[in-house]
Amino acid sequence: MKTAKTTLFMASMMAHLTLEQIVEKARAHKVTPEEKRAQRLSLMMGLRDSKSPITREQLKQWMDEHEGR
Image 1 (tube, rainbow, N blue to C red):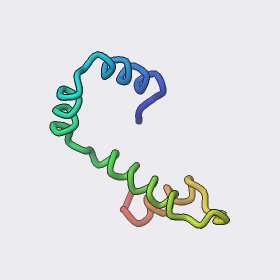
Image 2 (image 1 turned 45 degrees about the vertical axis):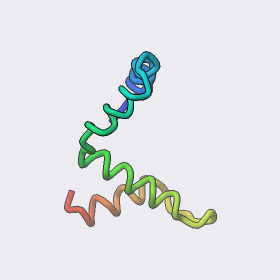
Image 3 (image 1 turned 135 degrees about the horizontal axis):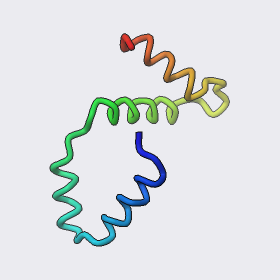
Image 4 (image 1 turned 90 degrees about the vertical axis):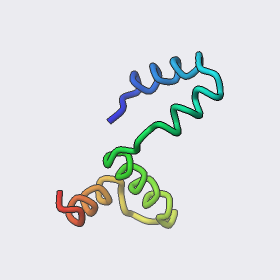
C-alpha cells in the first residue's frame, strides 16, 4: 500500500520527467494483483447508490470472502 510520503516522493520524481518519459513509464508498468484489487474496490465504491450504507470495509470483507483470502 502506498503511503502519502511515497506518493509525494513519486510525484516529485515525475515532475522532473518529460511527457515522453512519463508515458514510457506508464507503458512499462505491470499492474500488480493488489493494484487491480484496489481498482475493483474503488469501482464498487463509485457504483454504490449515494444513499448506500455499505462501507469500504464491508466491501473489502466481501471481496476477501469471495476471493478466498
